[in-house]
Image 1 (tube, helix red, strand yellow):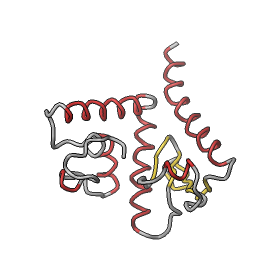
Image 2 (cartoon, rainbow, N blue to C red):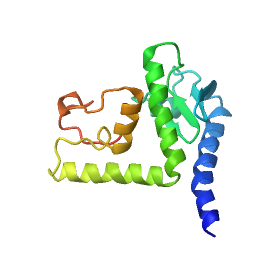
Image 3 (tube, rainbow, N blue to C red):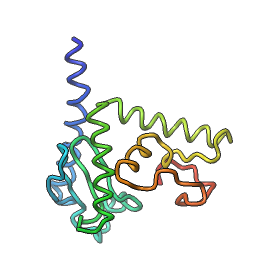
Image 4 (spheres, helix red, strand yellow):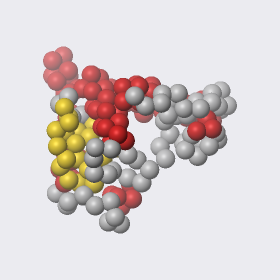
Length: 164
């Protein structure tokens, strides 16, 4: 019985990741970019200028890492920014490979905890998204700035919303 639970811990995120890709690929919302290493394949928005709910949902995001899948808002190029985004999202993919179903549960739990403590005034200098341990780890792995002070938060020092 234990081996079934352990197997499901990794199969469920893997299946859900690829179902999401299939859901977005069939109507042509995303385009296959290629294999980026580390058991990870990348996809990007087919045409960011199309105005539909899917492209609007990507506003403000550079990428999304799931188990063995990375989705990118823009078409990757040789630009250093895309290499950094791919490295960041690959780290999220490896977090899921390591923790399985626990990764999204722990990620969301951390963000909610940080959001509540910030709103209660216990940690006003902590951002629920930027200071989430999973985001800190991904930024570190990608060579990005890890500690982001409140005056550099997307909406300023009073911004405590975890997903903008």
